[in-house]
Length: 594
Image (cartoon, rainbow, N blue to C red; front, side, top):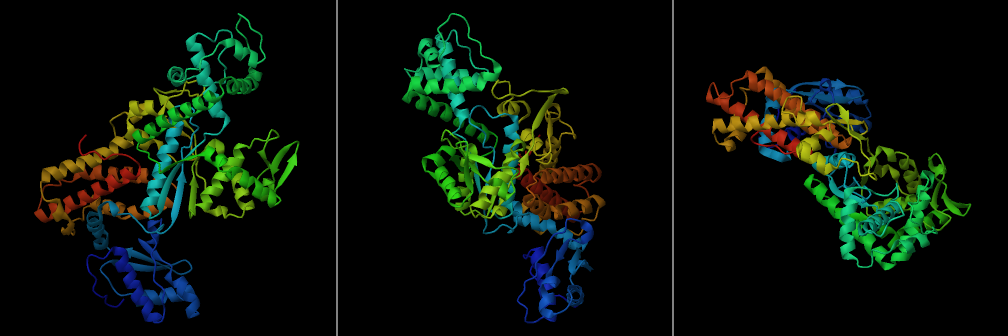
């Protein structure tokens, strides 16, 4: 390799390597306008960087990519950054860095701070991430918490990768479940007033304490809410009796439908007011709960707005005009099987009411019309069957469904002292997200939720989450950060001086391993963002913390010559910066003291 040109130390490592490649390109193809790009291989055996520039040049030069790559390697200027260069595969150029180059990652981290690891992969691209979106029919439970922690971390990673991220919660405020919650609240108010004697509370109603609380508040707010039992029994077509009326379990749904219809008839405008009241109460509780969990949304999108604006009727009309609807037994069906779904789907029932699927189509059309380059729907694993039908509708309407990604979040099981806790939303026997935070803390909850791939079942060990041991990853990682801050305090020097520290003393075995891990951080973040895999960040932070703790136990940081001490303080400061950044992406704090 020929001698390199002079570069300024402010230039990033990637910029300087690209400059070397550009020089080589100009030597073998002076007229080329191609700008070399660098990739970070996922396997260390493939080098620290790889470039596909030879594959891009080959066609214009009318040579094989491997031949072009060989010429580029020969023309590459020598540099203190590059230990060796290898030809790989069909024509990739793999670059292996020197120890000095890897040491420079410390300066880069200290110089860029929380911007280290950021990329422009998504620059100029808008992405919408929709997550949680649970029915506003009760407090968020621990299952919702996993979706919240996962979705927020994915959104943070995409932002780190340069995307313009819009975080959205889809409010299911137009469906039957809200009617059931409204009726449940009304019936509890009647019970509390002593008016409901012979009619039992329905087994499929919402039965948590929060319903009792809303019922008391609603009775105070709406003067005409509480009525005598007789009109209700009459509306239900039931005889007046002093005995408790029993309903077979198989008739629960029909009974609930009748109760909803009776409530609307007897309460009139008050029913809508009560419906708005319970919706507002539950949304406010949900918003506060999520904010306390460190999850904030840019928009809370109302399903009802799609009906009010006519968007649902419009998409159904568009499907019909395109010839993809047919009528059978009074219902209107979408030919989703023609687009890869396992069977056709109903969009409008025989009673004229649109299905949930119809509003789902309208919502996704709205997303596409807002112009997002990437749409990420984070759904519970029980919704996996909805993916092909939504894609089918988008294809039928002429949209590119490749812009839609749907990561699935599996269920969560809580374990305390080896015993599994049970959850049920309607029965009110669930463990809420708020209760979980109270028991284990926000940090432990956020990290534990993403310790496994989202599509894998998660067993949440409450005892481990509250333990102070190296087996508890949140404690282990936070303790590493706190230890670093304590050492820097004992050193007592000026942190601003560390950015220009000489780093050549960093040759200890532990230091070399830590440098390699720090160097891999940007590639790790890019992979985690591209794969929607925040668990990779958690694993990385745990590995980095493990190396630091081993380093802490074996190396006397504050002993030796001042140049060596300062180099080590620079390294520790860089480790602390990366730990803080990684934890922040996962919604976890980085305490200075523990």
